[in-house]
Image (cartoon, rainbow, N blue to C red; front, side, top):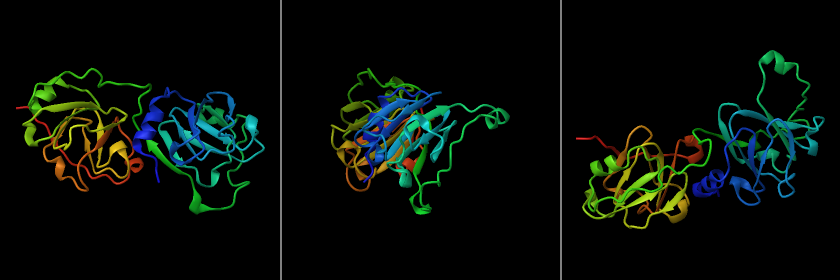
Length: 282
């Protein structure tokens, strides 16, 4: 079973997103015994808890990283290159490379001619491995992870009782991760404001009937607490605020938890069924 989105976000959000930084874990989906290393322009042996036991990893953009089967980045052993020059990559499952990596080195490649002249032999990934095309690593591109942990939805303003979507939009301009929930249709009752920016947040005011989502994030909504299982709906508010007035009719039950992201490759989240209205100022 894949780790919950909340678990992945919590782990990634604690790490400064700098080139050469890698999260290594001994279980799938970044679960258990996770270590963080930075191998920018130098070789780093994996810490003992994941040395030769890594089954999932998260690698930030800006570099090429080469993973070796021996400590010290010995190039006479087979190795694997992961290119994250332009895109952060998340590998919840390393497939046939599980429990093989022991060291890593990351760098920014030089222009082609200069790169070809470098004395680097990364070996062949197939040199010591069976030809198992059905067990390739499962990697997903992750777009938009901030360069450092942020919390732009802190200190949310206190909203008037029975606030209308227009009132909320005026008071929460460009607050990614800010979500306001009413437990009655069309904002006819009191509301609760939440900060779900790069985190999993449980909904306290059941049932979540009317939802207003501030501009700047894609938010996912679950029918279980802790962002567990498949999410029921999502709303893309990257370019504009979004709102929904009958969320209690979403399939599989009521909304119990949510998480908002700057943008993540949809493959990472699975199949997404988007809903939600666009708020238009009068």
